[in-house]
Amino acid sequence: MALSLGPIMSPIMNEMLWAASDAGIEDNFAKYGIVSGLFSGSYSIGDFVGPTVSSALVEEFGFPWATTFFGGFILFYTVVLAVFYLWEYYKHLKRRRKGPSTDRKITYNFKSVIPHISPY
Image 1 (cartoon, helix red, strand yellow):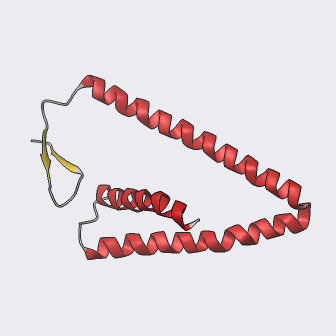
Image 2 (cartoon, one colour):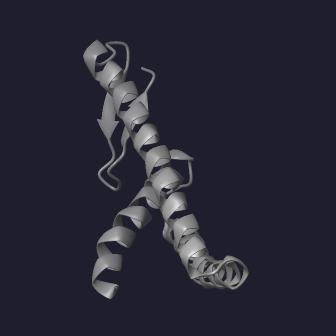
Image 3 (cartoon, one colour):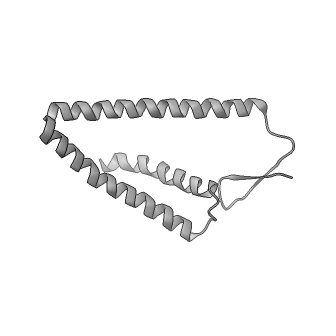
């Protein structure tokens, strides 16, 4: 279990940091603390809610129906994620076909990975 959590959690933390940068939060230790706290809190809530809900389902409906419910939920969530990522891929594919805009200058800030686009 621990071997599989590392490759899953590292990209999520990076995505959260990029989203915080996209939201305009400046790059300092406070941003890393906020994002880390939000990530840890969400993980801890999942550690509590998952076993609580699953044990309630097993007591109410029995083990076979509880596992069927969780399998159906995972299948539904997988389909939703696949549709979302395909939509995002094709949306960005259309932008790439148009090419870069000639009226904007893209500069890179080497403190972060995200390019900054200026209107001039």
